[in-house]
Length: 320
View 1: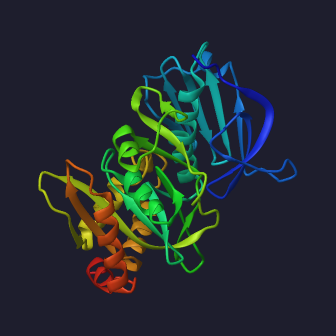
View 2: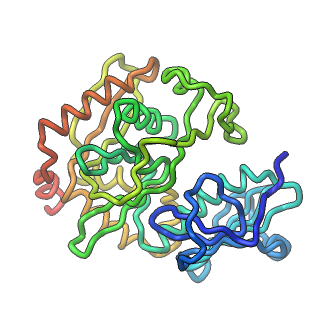
View 3: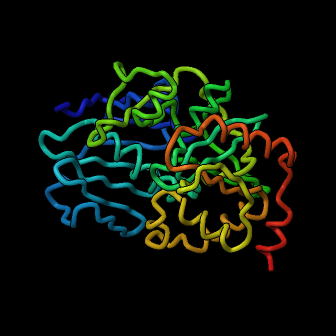
């Protein structure tokens, strides 16, 4: 069991935010102490003694999100500026960081008005392209296949999208790490010997992205939804209209917090902007076998053939 490592504080960078943390976050990029912090992560051992809720129930009060992971910690996210962790005795630090960088940051991004998609983002021709889908669809594996071809990663698991003054969607880099299943590591010829397994998932590992991580924000050029099917072929086709809006809601990270944070209208407006301005495709892939490299070719062909123009057909349908 690995006990939580703490420090007076360290400075980190993730999702375009400077983070001051009492918890050591080895996944993140360290920054200089002289920088002003956007977010503070701190430890409060007494919070667990006064907070009562059901396991994994997310309570929202005055824009403060609090939830409990049994035998691990209480996590509290306040005003998009502060995350408090109250660990239980003997709690595993890997699981604490898992929920800190996952659910806690998902809530914090929503509080800050940053649109979080569940997926990976890669860089193609100076633009970010989002790969979204259900858990296990193969999003990280597909992003790795792009990196094998020399493309860069912007984000894994949570894609942070902000909007410019002109309402153009922009993807903010997260941090240089991926989560890959053993099957994917085998396909890429990567040994798991030096990789840290994700707690409770002995066949899934945290893989640092040493090279091919893009550190500056880029405009979002398009969205690809990855879906597994029982078929034996790969297909790609555009998604339009209300179906597109529903898919954007479904693949928003921790979307159940949207109504609790009174963000339903905000999320609908931003989703409509994405639907109007971006091409959106669904990719169906076989449930069995390794098809990531073939999908890369299909995506690149689609992007090149369309010229990555704004999807005007989407705009017409959504506005009706």
